[in-house]
Image (cartoon, rainbow, N blue to C red; front, top):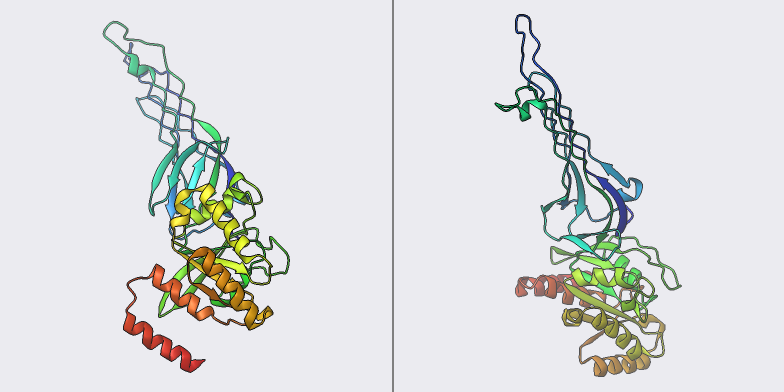
Length: 346
């Protein structure tokens, strides 16, 4: 299934049914009173989160959602039936914006969350509603109230355990395919990944969700490249896996570029747990690898893993570290026994 993280849709709540102008007419009853019933309510438009969804792809093929009008009232004081509501199912983490794409309506960040996006139109009163001791034959019946309508934007901020970040062509898609069963597009040119890709990583009989996110570029916090859409996904991830291409000349500059964009977008992003990885070491000799790893460790103050997503060298150590971050309750004795079994299989 293709991942879609943004969609524009039109929603309209149902109009209320019209009230009825009617009078009682029966044999031998000369002066029957008013008996026009009220109109029914139209359908409201609701948004509800679903645990079974992780993309907005359904809203690519259907953009218009209109609730039905309530039934009209009728004689004998019969009220019209209410129209059914329209319920839009969205993934957890979906934000709804007005048409200007800036005014936030609601952030659907909890499972089972339900929000009324548009209220239905009320039904009009029939003439029996206006009967009084003074006016016993009212000839007034109201039309139903119209429903609301508008265009809104749905924007999904992906909720994943770990987000893969880095400059374009850092090898993020290759790493995802190496540690999960996901099959992202892989090529040797920048911006191969234009939409986030999800993969489930299994280790120690546990699992976590890894998101391969489109590559950042300089000034992404200002909207350059995929800009805010990318950074919004990072905001919801529990930890970051920062991949740096070891074949480029300035690995420290690449690291600092990403960190600067994260900090400029949202200060809290730089405080998330981060695992720093030097990728594509299969293209370098040992001396060059150690030189770049030392430079990165000095600049970041963190341990730097050296791996190759193609040959899977060092990948297991990275997965073990990530599992310790997202699943801190993992039993240490069990983890050691698993690693021994893994080494024997290798």
